[in-house]
Structures are given as C-alpha cells and as structure tokens.
Length: 153
Image 1 (cartoon, helix red, strand yellow):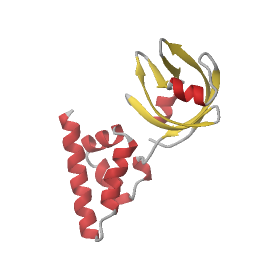
Image 2 (cartoon, rainbow, N blue to C red):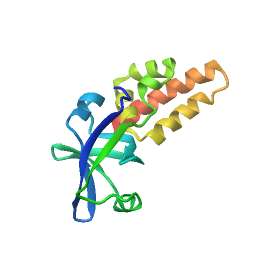
Image 3 (cartoon, one colour):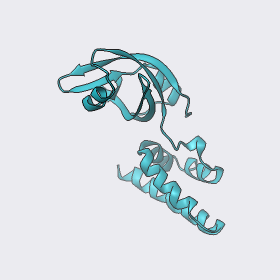
Image 4 (cartoon, rainbow, N blue to C red):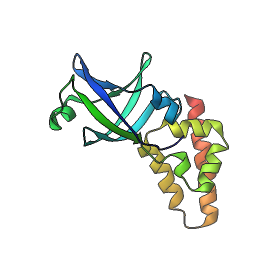
C-alpha cells in the first residue's frame, strides 16, 4: 500500500438528506483493495478528512451537508478532489514496528482497518518507551493485541 495522492473530478450527489461523491474505480487499484479507506486532502481546495466506503459496487465518500454549506459547495456540483490515505501507514513506520506487524497477517489486517487515531495511539505508546528492551516488549504486545482484535471480529 502507498500514500500516493490522487487528483480527480467527481460529482457531489444528494440522496435524501445524505451527500456523497462516487470515487473513481482506480482508487482500490492504487491503494489496495479494502472495504473502506480513511482519507485526507482537499475537496474543491477545502481541507477534508473522511472515510470512503463501499455502497453496493461503488466506492463512495460521504460528505456532510454542513461541511458542504460551510465551504460553498452545492450538491450536484462537479468538483476537484485531491486525496491521499490518512496515516500512519505501514510503509511509514519505523522498521522494527513495521516488520513485527507485517510478520502477523491478522495483526496487519487489523492495523490497516482501524482509524488513524487508533493507529497513532499504538505508535505513541511504543515510541514513548525509554529503553530498547521496553520498546521491543511494547511492539510484541501491540502485535499480539492487534492479532487478538482481528480474531474477535
């Protein structure tokens, strides 16, 4: 998986009280196939963070009506998107952490599925270790926790 940014135009659609953009089919090809993606970037030049998800066979990005109004964007308007996966991502992690997580496929799958806020929490705990021994123990405990959480799904 990579953190490559993608630019594209998409239509903001409204269905009842909900608004979203249908994202291009190329996104899963660029970022790896997943049920959802945590994204950051810009929509029509305005900062945005959100979670794209599958809606039937399409990948959609829900966009709140208040956010649209606050940024002067109307439903049924085609706008420019500049989006990237929100990190921290595995390929951005310190080598010891990345290799430990990648060595356990269940831990990796769970790590990649959780919100960036939770990923950062695990990493802050590991990085706050004062000794290499404590860091190694925390990495092992983190991998075991991620593994167990994936199995509980």
